[in-house]
Image 1 (cartoon, rainbow, N blue to C red):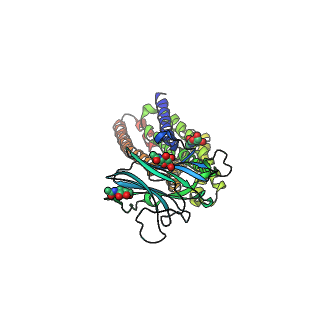
Image 2 (image 1 turned 120 degrees about the horizontal axis):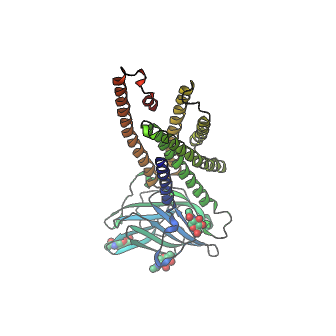
Image 3 (image 1 turned 90 degrees about the vertical axis):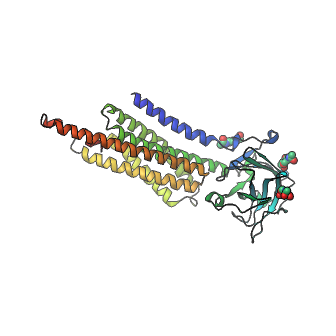
Length: 393
Ligand SMILES: *[C@@H]1O[C@H](CO)[C@@H](O)[C@H](O)[C@H]1NC(C)=O
Ligand SMILES: *[C@@H]1O[C@H](CO)[C@@H](O)[C@H](O)[C@H]1NC(C)=O
Ligand SMILES: *[C@@H]1O[C@H](CO)[C@@H](O)[C@H](O)[C@H]1NC(C)=O
């Protein structure tokens, strides 16, 4: 029983950890002079966020672009680009440090030619711009005079090294080439009618990702490990069975909730989803449900069909785990969150994989030892061979 409660505790700590890190969002940022913004959005890469207050009566937006984890030898930039989700044509707000302090200015990038990020006027008015650098956080504050075509448009953001006193070329890492998205300034309006869809959808996509990564992608493999590696210890019988069932059932319940959010997302916007992600998701739901029924319909341990049931249960189980990991990785690719998320998941997989390798070795040692012992006992008792160890493998 102690093992059951310990594993339940472990599972809930894991879920809690995911939720707390998920809850760390742009809402918790604070600004100079305790400035408040009515809307914010965490940007998908380069640990950045954008905060703004839109005033429909003047069509101006007061905004702050916040980039964490930067340094005094880096420049940062945020831009609107009505011509596309790319660098060419971007209307940039740039900030950097040099020997005379922190500087912020506007810089338009031409449609052709190498960008220099030189100071210049944008295609719209920027009545005020300044920046602060503190700790490792660069924040650009600006007021933009919007035109109607800029209310909902593309945004681009970037970070690169300073070459002495002027900005140098940004790196071409994945994050630096994926730093584009959409922004709808009307979202922050309290009386907004149509603009809030974008953020709501982003939130639902994140919820879908977290629910499914935790359930299918982490809890289910842990549940399988519990069954495989605890079973070999006689003292863990039948505790392993209850731990396994608890883990898989909670994973299934959370997983179905995540699956439903996914189906809803797909129905709301059938164009952007990946066909393979959706099909693998549906297959997983079917196989997962089958496993739950298989649990209810399993033959008694000494039943003649139990052997076939075991083969079926293991095959389906391992298929589910393989497909789950594949689909979480595919989902991360679609969602394209900050790299930390990818590493958090892949790191967890590497951790579980290493632990499995270790426990696999322990299991084999125990089973081989047990076989040897029972062979030595053979002359005294023909029933000495203990099928238990074989059952574990
Ligand atoms: C952030 O704050 C806004 C306004 O208070 C709220 O509507 C929104 O739900 C919050 N977002 C999150 C993810 O907590
Ligand atoms: C910096 O810019 C913001 C946004 O336009 C403005 O509200 C603020 O007053 C400016 N701060 C200073 C010190 O100029
Ligand atoms: C520091 O940067 C600002 C803005 O880019 C620039 O105007 C200024 O000349 C730079 N200072 C030096 C010492 O180069």
